[in-house]
Length: 480
Image 1 (cartoon, rainbow, N blue to C red):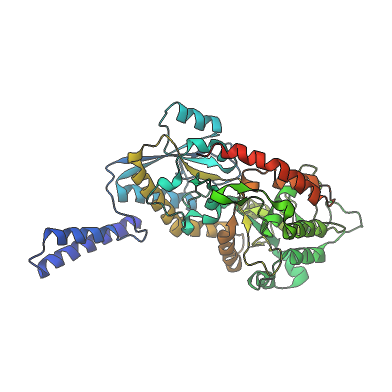
Image 2: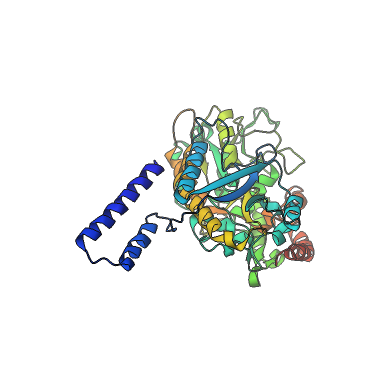
């Protein structure tokens, strides 16, 4: 389809040029140049139609042998008949290659590490132009990456560069990495709230009321636990896996989602974009943390027996239809649909209260694009054009297909959940305190306060404020 459109556009341009010559026999060379310039802007992305004469863009990403928790594919290999996402990726790549007369060479590696990055750069090995790198490790290798802002044709303010995520990597004046729509590696790690439609309907009636809470700005922490409490049921007053609960998820998943969803910013940017941790003196943040803690006390709304905050016990408790609500990243949605007989809907992670302006869906644990330091200056323009074209085209074609793929059920499509996904995509948000410094920040609070059930936030935040600046300082050393 894209090839056909390109050919039609080219024919239209040629016919326009012939018509201009016929109408104006005194056309000069300057006039001809002006027509060609207009022809370069025939695509909505506004990029020049440069003939790159076989230029090769080399991208390296993770394969799915190690990075199993996100969709990292950019160039599918082998047989993928019936996989609409891979078919679109193939068509997109072919279109870009034909349009610019270039080659997109996408290689995969099981585990790309900081050691790999360091060895390639220090050894002067021109292995790859762009590496799709695990977000947790980006700052540790920042010294070996170009400033992404050096790519003239890339506009990181556009939605197809996921600005809410990309902004996290603008530190100390350097754009270390970016999250383009050409990779689902980050978007697929966005958190959502899922709800069992059968349980909801049996207790509250039509599921449209669930979506109305979101539309009417009533989908809040209190509403989550209010609805959850209404479906709690024990067959024999012995609370175990035979019973029904309001919420299931690992402790890390639940508490991280609720903290970020409440608008808590663990690490903020100060002067020159330097990260700062100042939560201990933030009264509103303390109120939010305490509220989340209290909502999980003295009731059976939330059920998880694991001592490991990273694991959920019992596993797949939502999929086994024992809870009204679950918290899942988008990458887990197809698996959940395959495991469940009942239908489920998708809504954003709830807000702190109705006064909060935006929803925030934590997006962490994926891969982002980093520009290798070994890339020479004369390659920058072509790389920028191709990355911008890939990101723009993916936003127009791949992302809508991804949304449809997430909504497939055994029974019918879900237009209401489709609208909810639009909100989720727009609210995808990253935070250095989760994506990069999880152990010292978000997970530290989960282990030392939420898991114990004791309100010791003030003391632990004070301890964190003494130690975290040194961790930040160590990471900043890697950023020129």
